Length: 150
Image (tube, rainbow, N blue to C red):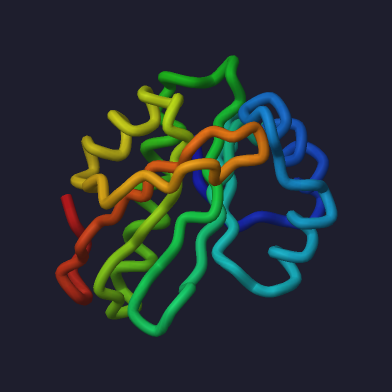
């Protein structure tokens, strides 16, 4: 498995993974716009086949934001999510940020536990964050400026 930069010809596959992973997903145009904006956009590839992605950016001067991360349901528990998150954290860590944050659907306990293994902490719950009325758990990771955690 390799983690590499997103390429425009990955767009359709990333969109497929997004749709199978989330009840409410970003539209394909949103992925195109994020790519054109120059955000961090990585994919995990196994034998030439895209199996997951992560999108991240610097939201504020000292904060990174994991916008979205997902893995094809047929490749979960193969460490693709781990490889993607480690790479995103590594890149953001080298940018002298204080924290990385993300949002998780309050019903996705598996994802919350996954992020906790990387020392993400729960900040708070934002009720009604998602279109279906579910709340979002805001989680953050404090960084040791310029040093990769783990």
